[in-house]
Image 1 (spheres, rainbow, N blue to C red):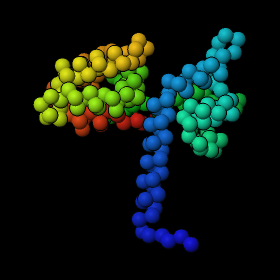
Image 2 (cartoon, rainbow, N blue to C red):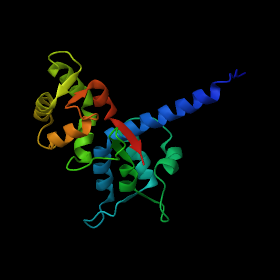
Image 3 (cartoon, one colour):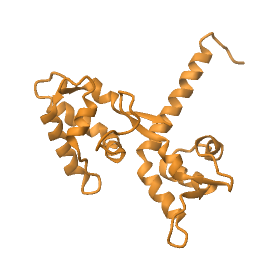
Length: 195
Protein backbone atom coordinates (compact mmCIF):
# COMPACT_ATOMS: atom_id res chain seq x y z
CA UNK A 1 0.00 0.00 0.00
CA UNK A 2 1.31 3.45 -0.89
CA UNK A 3 0.01 6.66 0.56
CA UNK A 4 0.16 9.66 -1.73
CA UNK A 5 -0.12 13.30 -0.85
CA UNK A 6 -0.50 16.29 -3.13
CA UNK A 7 3.18 17.15 -2.79
CA UNK A 8 4.51 13.71 -3.84
CA UNK A 9 5.14 14.67 -7.47
CA UNK A 10 6.93 17.84 -6.46
CA UNK A 11 9.00 15.89 -3.93
CA UNK A 12 9.90 13.22 -6.50
CA UNK A 13 10.88 15.91 -9.04
CA UNK A 14 13.05 17.65 -6.45
CA UNK A 15 14.63 14.34 -5.43
CA UNK A 16 15.31 13.47 -9.08
CA UNK A 17 16.94 16.87 -9.70
CA UNK A 18 19.04 16.53 -6.54
CA UNK A 19 20.18 13.04 -7.59
CA UNK A 20 21.14 14.28 -11.07
CA UNK A 21 23.05 17.22 -9.59
CA UNK A 22 24.86 14.95 -7.11
CA UNK A 23 25.87 12.53 -9.87
CA UNK A 24 27.06 15.45 -12.04
CA UNK A 25 29.19 16.70 -9.14
CA UNK A 26 30.77 13.28 -8.61
CA UNK A 27 31.51 12.90 -12.33
CA UNK A 28 32.99 16.41 -12.48
CA UNK A 29 35.19 15.82 -9.43
CA UNK A 30 36.62 12.65 -11.07
CA UNK A 31 36.72 13.98 -14.63
CA UNK A 32 40.53 14.03 -14.80
CA UNK A 33 40.82 10.39 -13.67
CA UNK A 34 38.04 9.23 -16.01
CA UNK A 35 39.75 10.94 -18.95
CA UNK A 36 43.08 9.31 -18.15
CA UNK A 37 41.60 5.82 -17.93
CA UNK A 38 39.44 6.24 -21.04
CA UNK A 39 42.53 7.34 -22.98
CA UNK A 40 44.47 4.29 -21.76
CA UNK A 41 41.67 2.02 -22.97
CA UNK A 42 41.42 3.89 -26.26
CA UNK A 43 45.05 3.54 -27.47
CA UNK A 44 45.16 1.67 -30.76
CA UNK A 45 48.38 1.51 -32.76
CA UNK A 46 49.84 4.28 -30.63
CA UNK A 47 46.90 6.65 -31.29
CA UNK A 48 43.64 7.46 -29.56
CA UNK A 49 40.35 7.68 -31.40
CA UNK A 50 38.33 9.30 -28.61
CA UNK A 51 35.99 6.36 -28.06
CA UNK A 52 35.45 3.33 -25.84
CA UNK A 53 32.97 0.47 -25.84
CA UNK A 54 29.85 0.75 -23.69
CA UNK A 55 31.00 -2.13 -21.48
CA UNK A 56 34.34 -0.42 -20.88
CA UNK A 57 32.56 2.82 -20.01
CA UNK A 58 30.34 1.05 -17.45
CA UNK A 59 33.33 -0.71 -15.87
CA UNK A 60 35.35 2.51 -15.59
CA UNK A 61 32.43 4.47 -14.12
CA UNK A 62 31.87 1.79 -11.45
CA UNK A 63 35.57 1.48 -10.60
CA UNK A 64 36.46 5.19 -10.51
CA UNK A 65 33.32 6.62 -8.92
CA UNK A 66 32.79 3.64 -6.57
CA UNK A 67 29.05 4.10 -6.93
CA UNK A 68 27.15 0.85 -7.16
CA UNK A 69 24.63 1.95 -9.77
CA UNK A 70 23.18 0.16 -12.75
CA UNK A 71 25.60 1.78 -15.19
CA UNK A 72 24.24 -0.26 -18.09
CA UNK A 73 20.85 1.42 -17.65
CA UNK A 74 22.38 4.85 -17.08
CA UNK A 75 24.77 4.63 -20.05
CA UNK A 76 22.24 5.39 -22.83
CA UNK A 77 21.09 8.50 -20.94
CA UNK A 78 24.48 9.78 -19.78
CA UNK A 79 26.72 8.66 -22.64
CA UNK A 80 24.85 7.58 -25.78
CA UNK A 81 26.68 5.44 -28.30
CA UNK A 82 27.45 6.46 -31.86
CA UNK A 83 26.38 4.49 -34.94
CA UNK A 84 29.25 2.02 -34.40
CA UNK A 85 28.16 1.36 -30.80
CA UNK A 86 31.03 3.34 -29.26
CA UNK A 87 30.95 6.10 -26.64
CA UNK A 88 32.74 9.34 -27.47
CA UNK A 89 34.23 9.87 -24.04
CA UNK A 90 35.41 13.46 -24.65
CA UNK A 91 31.86 14.49 -25.55
CA UNK A 92 30.60 12.70 -22.44
CA UNK A 93 33.12 14.35 -20.11
CA UNK A 94 32.82 17.79 -21.71
CA UNK A 95 29.15 17.88 -20.69
CA UNK A 96 30.23 18.47 -17.09
CA UNK A 97 31.56 21.96 -16.51
CA UNK A 98 31.85 24.40 -13.70
CA UNK A 99 29.51 27.30 -14.33
CA UNK A 100 30.37 30.62 -12.82
CA UNK A 101 27.35 32.19 -11.14
CA UNK A 102 27.05 35.01 -13.68
CA UNK A 103 25.82 32.46 -16.21
CA UNK A 104 29.03 32.04 -18.21
CA UNK A 105 29.49 28.42 -19.09
CA UNK A 106 33.00 27.45 -18.17
CA UNK A 107 35.93 29.73 -17.68
CA UNK A 108 36.46 33.01 -19.40
CA UNK A 109 39.72 34.67 -20.32
CA UNK A 110 42.84 32.94 -19.09
CA UNK A 111 41.17 30.88 -16.32
CA UNK A 112 40.91 27.31 -17.55
CA UNK A 113 38.35 24.63 -16.72
CA UNK A 114 41.29 22.59 -15.33
CA UNK A 115 42.08 25.33 -12.80
CA UNK A 116 38.43 25.62 -11.85
CA UNK A 117 38.18 21.83 -11.53
CA UNK A 118 41.24 21.81 -9.25
CA UNK A 119 39.57 24.46 -7.10
CA UNK A 120 36.34 22.45 -7.04
CA UNK A 121 38.10 19.26 -5.97
CA UNK A 122 39.78 21.19 -3.16
CA UNK A 123 37.01 23.64 -2.29
CA UNK A 124 36.59 22.31 1.25
CA UNK A 125 40.25 23.06 1.97
CA UNK A 126 39.98 26.43 0.24
CA UNK A 127 36.89 27.25 2.32
CA UNK A 128 38.91 26.48 5.46
CA UNK A 129 41.68 28.77 4.19
CA UNK A 130 38.99 31.37 3.40
CA UNK A 131 37.79 31.32 7.02
CA UNK A 132 41.35 31.33 8.36
CA UNK A 133 42.33 34.36 6.25
CA UNK A 134 39.23 36.34 7.13
CA UNK A 135 41.14 37.99 9.98
CA UNK A 136 38.54 40.58 10.86
CA UNK A 137 35.77 37.94 10.68
CA UNK A 138 33.74 40.11 8.31
CA UNK A 139 32.85 37.21 6.00
CA UNK A 140 34.85 38.51 3.04
CA UNK A 141 38.37 38.32 1.68
CA UNK A 142 40.12 40.80 -0.54
CA UNK A 143 42.43 40.11 -3.47
CA UNK A 144 45.53 39.89 -1.28
CA UNK A 145 43.91 37.39 1.09
CA UNK A 146 42.63 35.35 -1.86
CA UNK A 147 46.09 35.28 -3.42
CA UNK A 148 47.58 34.07 -0.11
CA UNK A 149 44.99 31.30 0.08
CA UNK A 150 45.68 30.09 -3.46
CA UNK A 151 49.43 30.18 -2.74
CA UNK A 152 48.89 27.94 0.29
CA UNK A 153 46.73 25.59 -1.77
CA UNK A 154 49.33 25.47 -4.56
CA UNK A 155 51.98 24.35 -2.06
CA UNK A 156 49.76 21.39 -1.17
CA UNK A 157 48.82 20.51 -4.76
CA UNK A 158 52.27 19.97 -6.22
CA UNK A 159 53.43 20.72 -9.77
CA UNK A 160 50.55 19.17 -11.75
CA UNK A 161 47.66 20.85 -9.97
CA UNK A 162 48.98 24.40 -9.75
CA UNK A 163 46.39 27.15 -10.04
CA UNK A 164 47.59 30.05 -12.13
CA UNK A 165 45.91 33.29 -13.19
CA UNK A 166 44.92 34.14 -9.64
CA UNK A 167 43.89 37.70 -10.52
CA UNK A 168 41.54 36.55 -13.29
CA UNK A 169 40.04 33.92 -11.01
CA UNK A 170 39.49 36.53 -8.30
CA UNK A 171 37.70 38.78 -10.80
CA UNK A 172 35.42 35.88 -11.85
CA UNK A 173 34.57 35.04 -8.24
CA UNK A 174 33.97 38.65 -7.21
CA UNK A 175 30.45 38.56 -8.60
CA UNK A 176 29.35 41.99 -7.40
CA UNK A 177 32.72 43.55 -8.34
CA UNK A 178 33.17 45.20 -4.95
CA UNK A 179 36.80 44.06 -4.56
CA UNK A 180 35.92 41.34 -2.05
CA UNK A 181 34.63 37.78 -2.18
CA UNK A 182 32.14 36.91 0.52
CA UNK A 183 31.24 33.35 1.42
CA UNK A 184 28.03 33.48 -0.64
CA UNK A 185 29.94 34.52 -3.76
CA UNK A 186 32.52 31.84 -3.07
CA UNK A 187 29.90 29.10 -2.80
CA UNK A 188 27.94 30.35 -5.84
CA UNK A 189 31.03 29.94 -7.99
CA UNK A 190 30.94 26.15 -7.63
CA UNK A 191 27.91 25.23 -9.64
CA UNK A 192 28.24 22.14 -11.84
CA UNK A 193 26.26 22.08 -15.05
CA UNK A 194 25.57 19.36 -17.53
CA UNK A 195 25.45 20.65 -21.09
